[in-house]
Length: 165
Image (cartoon, rainbow, N blue to C red; front, top):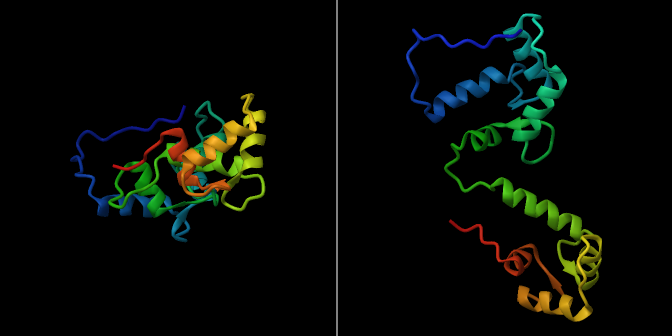
């Protein structure tokens, strides 16, 4: 079994952003500025020295990448690494915001960045909600930014969601 031990004689660190940059650089084995699957594979192999951890290594690596890879490019850049650790000084998207953006993209059938009457009607039917044309028009009006369609922010307003601090 792969053992990840702590050295109790080593002093604890303050976890400053500079120290996290160093940790990122350790994980970025090929020094390309992003953590990829091969980087994690090398790290895992170095810690476990061929010992069986009881877990599928590829599944663990895929899970690690997918949890941190906010832009879904298959890599973890430093800003994403900071976000996972909760260090970012800039306002970053929460996982709920990312999920809401994904939901919006699913609803936006033509990909124009706006939900038309037809997009909303189709989604409501797909989701199993009964909504008349008047209900859809009321939703669009409630969004308040256009009489024809709904932006992402207007959808959040319709749903009563506010991501402001």
